[in-house]
Length: 118
Image 1 (cartoon, rainbow, N blue to C red):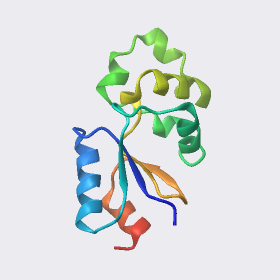
Image 2: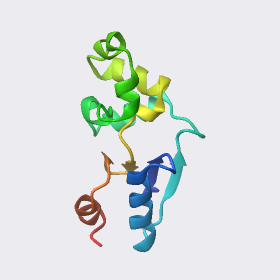
Image 3: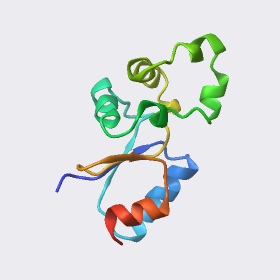
Image 4: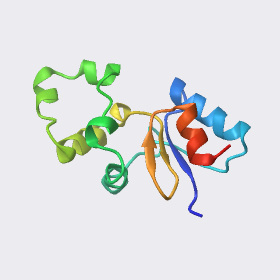
């Protein structure tokens, strides 16, 4: 089985919930702090294979709201969204969970229970 990787930033509430959920159920995983370790275009493209760009791009957060309207208007497809995510990883909807079979974003206890049957 491929290693499970949880991507995010440690001080994000949703990332904290996901990390706690995985740890309390002894789900082996690796945490990738993408503020410190970064993210690559290849990684974003791998996420986009499973997650639509308009879901992966967090338009509800302060990072999106702080962007100038002209910059927001430039985000029209997966490529433009990926370029923005590379420029500003904080705009990625967190956490991103990659299991080797699928990728999902955000934390939902129901989704994690379904994924790990725990």
